[in-house]
Length: 60
Image: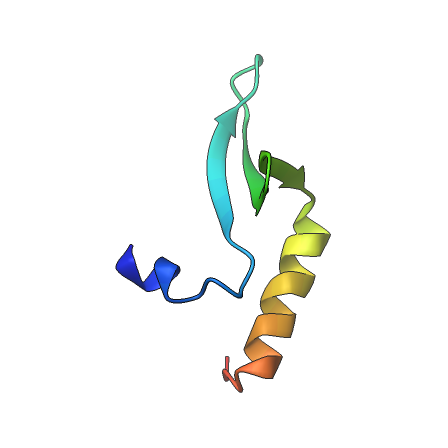
């Protein structure tokens, strides 16, 4: 994970496989903020990745 430290100007996110009480699973997306991590929705995560890919000319 050393490459993460090279992107200090970029937001850091993590994805956690979260198991609900009824044993269904979902992905929980979290954004690093100064107080720790804040849960974000999948639409924001998608926008964040699209924005990163556009600004860095990444091709799908």
